[in-house]
Amino acid sequence: MRAWGKLENNQHHLQPFLKPGLAKAQVYYISIENSPVYLIAMFVDPSVKLNWVSKHWDDGSKTTVHNNIL
Image 1 (cartoon, rainbow, N blue to C red):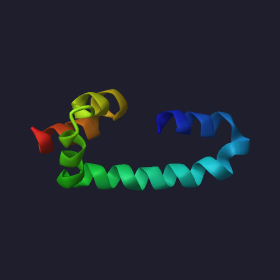
Image 2 (cartoon, one colour):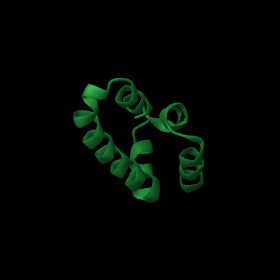
Image 3 (cartoon, one colour):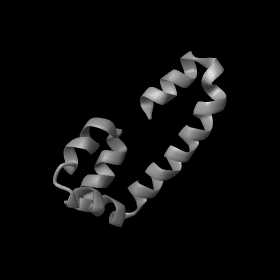
Image 4 (cartoon, rainbow, N blue to C red):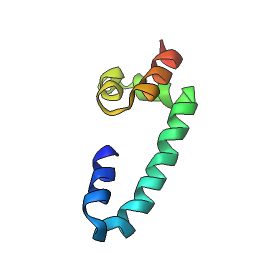
């Protein structure tokens, strides 16, 4: 999502396409962060684990995930 946000800021002609997509993705990420069921489902698949979250999510979201999972 960060890369899309940067793209939206740097490529103004793409804003009509990126803005709705980013808004939808933000709603999805908020629902994941606030629901332990989504978080647990991500980690049932051993290929995902906490590495993906650690690499791609911001510090506050990582803390929420770790607190809900561990």
